[in-house]
Figure 1: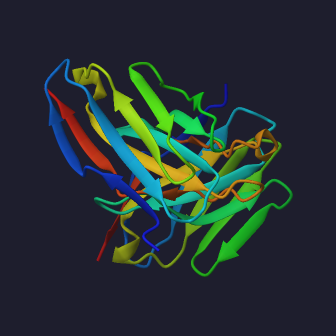
Figure 2 (figure 1 turned 30 degrees about the vertical axis):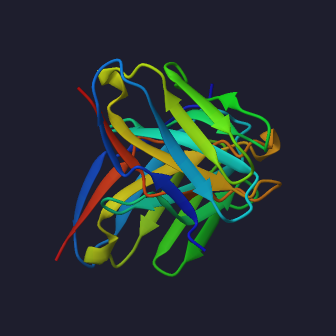
Length: 114
Length: 113
């Protein structure tokens, strides 16, 4: 079945630096790739997503890139701020399955040091 | 809108006890999901309900049962709890029909001793 690998498991950056989290997926039929942010004690929340018909999507300080050939996608956060500290999850899905099922990566704990 | 609500927030069980985790959403979503979150393992799908009246197994269904009571509510039951089921459980929902954003509840932290 589908497998999503996420790296690194922990990431520590200085405030103002950039952070990059990478994911690879195994199912070439996957075509929807969301990223979720989970703050301490809360449920995950969608921050950005990308579909396989585009290579890059940007929303203010966050961007996601997708390489379908290599089957990997990345989250880029620029000008990091302490409030970016959280656990980030990537996920993959086949929209054609009509079930909405997501397969999640293992998560990355991002710490932004002031 | 409350979004997705889960009860209880915390629970401690002894091995062999049973309990039901409740989940409700007020967004008129078609699909609902139960995940467990363990350190280093990400979110793993236990069961899901793609639409009212249907339920299917996810990646880790053993030891669990579910009921889609109506369109709003989706419960998860542990018939005989085991220490391996100590985890944080999240319920999520999505509109379905081409909309894929999943909305998560606040989670239930379950400890089985």
